[in-house]
Length: 167
Image (cartoon, rainbow, N blue to C red; front, side, top):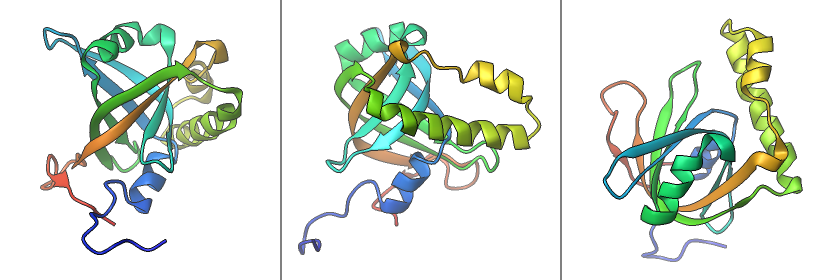
């Protein structure tokens, strides 16, 4: 299907969605009603056809964040590739929080394997990383959100600049 004239380009380009789903360091943040931040790391990311994004996290490590999301519904997520420091930040609105489904396990395992392999290549011990990235499937939740802003955060002169429909 071709884009209709006058229709805005999608916020997340194919290149950006590929970057987000390759197996990265992912941190998710929200805030409480007093604007005190809460933060957790995510295991993996999936971009859906409806332009929403699903982040997978360990519930027991994210209790404050999950409570805050239910109240304020706003979030910010940072995706970073450790080897190059290429980083983006996406802000958005919560759609839902639900338990992870069994068919999502292979996607999460693939992305965790990729980030672990990259970190091993940088000199981190594999045994430590296997422990750090260990998953108890009954403890994994999926946070689905609708992105509304993307920012370049790679260190350098463009850090902090809003990205508009980039290829």
